[in-house]
Length: 170
Image 1 (cartoon, rainbow, N blue to C red):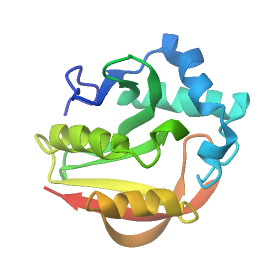
Image 2: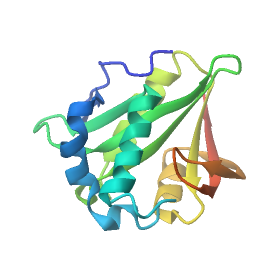
Image 3: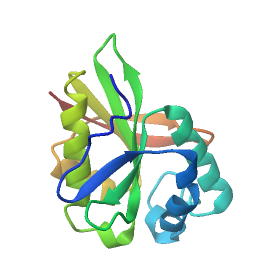
Image 4: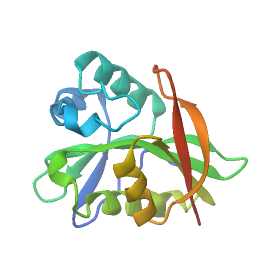
């Protein structure tokens, strides 16, 4: 599976493969504490926590900066991770968006691009959503995710947290 394709684009968003030079631009988006208030690590708006998040994104080899297609403005980030060719599964996660994107079709547009690409290689896509992240749980249900179980998940460089596993099958 190609974890960082360069052709994920539609009328609303463009998913550009993340590189080190995006740090400051993406941190400007991520530095809003309200973005993270329901996430498993609500401190990601702080520089040290975001630096760890970004390091994990770079090491994943599957991260994107999400941009507005027309303006080029950074809107957030998401990534592919946990690819397992043997069971034909990949995860999509670590997603966040600026508050200006909330309640619009941005998340749906991003996930549609990522799912369409992933289903060229896998039969199942998994998503882990923090147990307290009601906003993301509702968003998962709106895009067709099925909650299959609760799991304790270790995020990159962070303590284990209770999450809900959602799946979307090809």
